[in-house]
Amino acid sequence: MATSCVGCGVCEQACPSNIPLLKIFKTVSHNVQEIFNYVPGKNLEELLPLTTFKEDELQRIGEE
Image 1 (cartoon, rainbow, N blue to C red):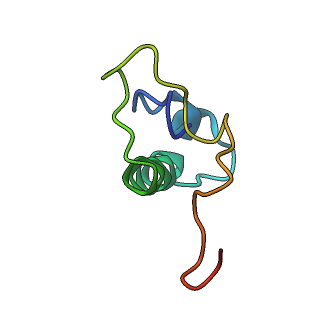
Image 2: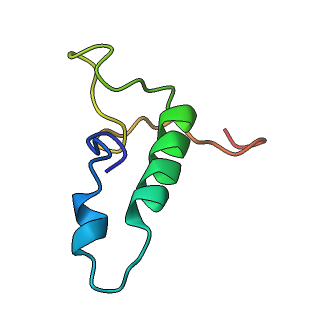
């Protein structure tokens, strides 16, 4: 959802529990895009976040 949700709201309409999925997906998408410096559609050759692993990403301060 972080890289492919288009915000159409169909998932929210279909949810039998009335969960605000669109709001959740937008929040998660924004956070993932910010953390990984990813802009959807900017570069078609760029690998999608969360589909690749870079050993040095998301290291905590002080870890090597």
